[in-house]
Amino acid sequence: MYIEMKPPFKFHCFKCETSGALNLNTMRDLGIFDSEFSTAVISANKTVKADSAVRITHIRKEKIFNLDDSEISQRNVNYFNNRYKTNFTNEYISNKFKVITNPPKWFKDNNVFVPYGQYDFNNAIGFLSADNSHVVFRDTSGKQEKRYYNLNLEADNDITTASKIYNIRSTLDIMQEKTTLVITEGIFDIIGVYSHFYKDTPAEENTIFAAACGKAYNAVINHFVQMGFIDLDVIIYSDGDVEDNFYRNLKKSSIYIERSPLTVYYNSLYNKDTGFGKDYGVPKEQIKLRKMII
Image 1 (tube, one colour):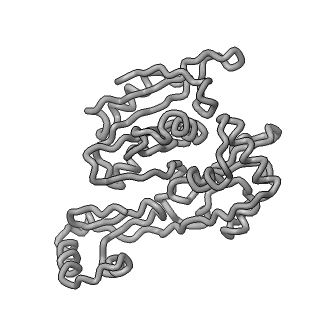
Image 2 (cartoon, rainbow, N blue to C red):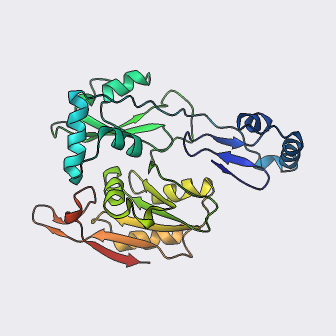
Image 3 (tube, one colour):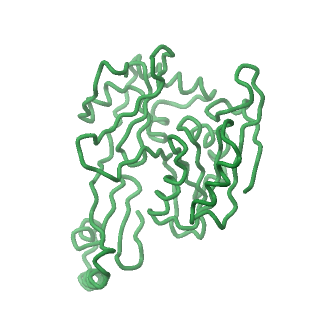
């Protein structure tokens, strides 16, 4: 949890994505019963101009991941591991990467209504977004008309803060002077980058791993800045079909990274079937990094 140490005092929980004003009720929920401290915080918040006031946003509860050993789950775990040449368990990929290996069961456990008929969820693997508002599904059969299906879990609510941004769970220290933000375009890519280059290494410490789910890199940067990570060292592992100038323009358009070096990696390993490497959601031996600093 992060608490902003200036009026208006705000908080953000990185687990359930709840955020808002540090008011009396919130402090009691946190187990803070110091009346003098509480009065000082509330008094300081009241001195802030009305146009900068904050309020509790829609609370997105942590989703349930009741694992099983069904044929659907095993098939999707095998699909995941075959893609990366890993041997991760169902429990690990569900807890670490918020992967849904049995979508029909997950829907039932979380009381999620889905429009069956539009997509075959029995042959798909899902990834829950950072704020628990979306699930991005990927076809695992190779037979569906659409490879991807985006499910908005809050379609019936007027929620403007919902985002498809995907984030791998990691330990972060908001008090560190600088935080590294690693971004890819796709979810499979960020999982591959994390697993191949950062997992169980010193570089994993205080690093955010996020997928833009498209080329909305500024949205990812702004998302974490709003959480309180002001000084970001941004590294992008780019798809091979994105021109260098795209990232030069990105750097110019973001006030948070325009004065800092922007590191971009490309997968330059040649593949006879696909040409030069485009993605990172592959085994490590199929990746050869080419580094560019802007």
